[in-house]
Image (cartoon, rainbow, N blue to C red; front, side, top):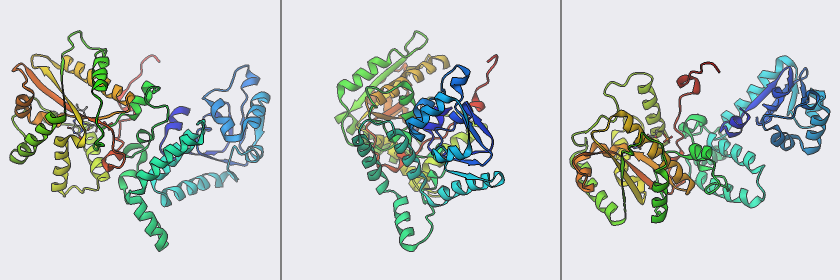
Length: 419
Ligand SMILES: Cc1cc2nc3c(=O)[nH]c(=O)nc-3n(C[C@H](O)[C@H](O)[C@H](O)COP(=O)(O)O)c2cc1C
């Protein structure tokens, strides 16, 4: 849990109104600001029980209160008063018990009402993550990117004019209000050790559908290595995927073909499979709707502006500016279990791309033009196009890339039995 709080894009404030001992206090260390009632008590009592500090508190505690206090509290294991916690910097303020929650809420409200949520999310990640950096240059590299990217945002225009007019900023980018579900943050804040030293969890967390790429080319050896390594993806022994990689002149040709084709057949061609079930029931329909709306909100395209929504969709067929793409096809005699093998292969490709510093967007939209693609790729009759995928380097200034698509909560999709 401590690590989940550490990764949070939203600020976390704790209000302590009782005994916070053991995990009761260590879980609060990755929180940003702690308030306590005068009745609160704290204790890092591990050594008195013959155990040691947990919940990554050996990392957090000394950063919050300094190494000497951290050691003193852990060595003695004593339970100490709210006053001592205040004096040593563990808590920010003390309150009468019945005034504690209003004070915590007022602080949260001050942040929510006045600050641009994306700036807050990035500040949170910068300050926490840089607490472990070995040189200020690491902070310089990251905060320069953040300033450059945020400097062009609508929030800046609003913030500056609010300052000039002495008005309250309204944070125009409504999509970013709900930081955890539909905002930028961790994925665009890449740690310096990203890439070669990236952990699987970092690759998973930082992968997102990128819908705006830099014109920087992708090295041919890199994509070959990724596709080759990804063949270790598990499957049902058939390896039923087939990949076409398209770049350079071939990609330009395909884009030209698609410009004409989309104009003459905007609704697509005869489908070979349904991208979504025809009757999409709750909760799936709601989830699909939620992601779509979050994307258009980021792009500031209202629902009634069909022309701009269609134009955004049509960007798919220019690969969102990516310099490289792949197409994945499958023998049409394969059934649902084998299609899952395709998914596992493609997800592995997308994670390995992250390790190379590359980004991607899976693009099933190509399957609405199966005849055009079949002819362009010279697919044999037994193969059916499943999906395309745009590949390249994320353009950090592309607004569409600020979307952090929402996900269902663990309890909504997982049941645990016997554990
Ligand atoms: C098989 C597949 C096909 C997809 N096709 C498209 C597409 O045609 N265009 C697009 O913009 N996104 C496409 N996506 C991306 C999804 O919209 C995206 O994965 C989802 O919203 C979750 O967001 P995230 O990838 O940023 O986490 C596709 C994803 C998958 C897995």
